[in-house]
Length: 249
Image (tube, rainbow, N blue to C red; front, side):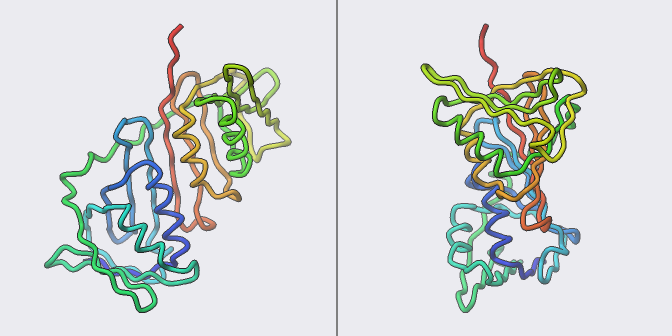
């Protein structure tokens, strides 16, 4: 059983964080809320989304596992205005999802969850760089890097206590340095660490991060980067994990 009502703006923003990586996913429902864990087909980027039951306008659910086509789902939800309420109800006999938005009623066929990529395990990383930065600053750095290269580095300098984003192109370079006065929090443990990442993935992730979000970034030396942030003032929580690009010496 699943029946809920949720603000369209919250639902759109939440689903966007997942759809930048995958076209379909498994959706877990229980009395605590809705959760998604998904990894892209290349096993490079991972996302975890949690929308607690209390963030819905109304919510009822038994333990359910649904297979969702995100492309079709986003098209439907995209027809709602930001302040609209989206009603969703699972038909247990047909295993279809009924979606209602301001007089519109859409019946969405679900996917067999067994046909969808297995949900990933989120690794518990203990990395030296622990930074909390505004989403706008992160997006600015990623956008600047895209002007010169197709990959960029996140790093921390324990020598001068800074978090930096840099990219090197064939002719031009770009670097953004953020010290303790430029970020919300900054911990380096006195260490220097840097990892290189695909800009295609970082750009997609950055665009889904709200500009006003406080993004907790964990950085290591040739380790995945982990980014945690809230959507809609904490109504949903998102974790991104991106594998590093290791360059040959």
